[in-house]
Image (tube, rainbow, N blue to C red):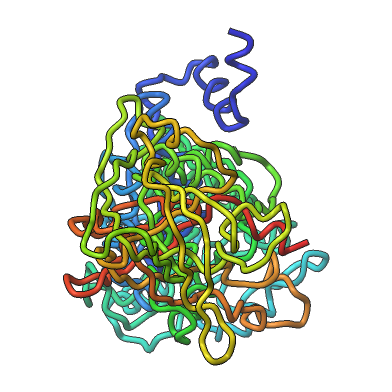
Length: 559
């Protein structure tokens, strides 16, 4: 039992302590509360896994709530994408809620605060309000409108709601403490005028509640027991609780806010504002570009739900911000795809091989294992013929003893097939090798049971039969940025560190077994890496995304 307790993270300890001190387990309820102003990214994935994981651990409901309080930046497209991403990760929410569902209740509570002299309408411009806030070491000064009468505040607030004023003419502020050491408590804004159509309420409202006023009250309305957010909201907790105390019913659950550290990923950015710049300025091809750290981008690139969840579990929950090397995420992708992805042979930089002693009019099929990780092995047949493609890098005219691939006078085994020997290199007018003539040992076919089939040679190459190969487009991806923290380079814009080689589009050739594969299907190109079929594929052109290599080659380059 002690070992189990030791393995709990600090958030689970909070919940366990609450249960031990009498909080009813049946009252546990969690939520994931995204703002629909962009697509979810890998940082959100950790929060999703935390909240829904707690729901699974404690058999408690988890709401998916959209904190949709800013129609200037929110769109239905983002709502749809968020729902799609959470479902793809394998989670089911108990209720789908929206902060906009509570606009009337929030307004009614605001009216009550005005009546209690705890809120007032401020008619100053935003610059004046900001200046009066003071500094962390200097108290703020009262607004000249702080002591307006209840009647005047109620009338002005009603007129704000009725659309009588232009955007920015007035705001509603909570009356708390302009000398508080926590600047967020210095009469924070609760409502602003915004003449924008909302994606759900259309033009029903022209005043919109601020996030700090909305968030905790929404948790309370939904009877969320534990509200988890990232560290930048730690200073907001005092305000979160103050707002709750104004409306709380002692017979109901008061949500408890606690904060955990954001996990930043190297060689990328996870600010939605900066991700939006990448999209709007055409740096990437949309929110689901496979170079983006969005969940949609990772999915399109070929990352799996299990790999992302395993990554989130590995980095854990902590109280201090940390930069996680992207290679750890890629490690989990490899680990998962190694178990699941069928193996095929594909050649990305082709060199023609002619087996001169193989009959010109003959073709045959060799048996290849689909995935050695399968509990019950399955096999496919791969066509073999006189003319093949191998990788350019797998041949050298001359090489030292440590080169175990094909060289003149040397032998290698073609995977699942025969041993061949390079006899002659054919070159173009510039001296480049364009074709290699080989001979094969007809008795050396893999699995044939002959003594020659057991003969050991040091190199094994993947290949495709030219006659049967399927031509495909291959998109090779690299880090989007050349430095680990592109948005923390002093005096520099993060776009200055874009990697010009983050996308390389090439023509490749694969074995014909992929002909019936569907968009999203994963494969391991043997000796190369993991790939999946992109949504841009058509019956006429199959497009593969390179998900990740078989090993972390970037670490060597980076050093």
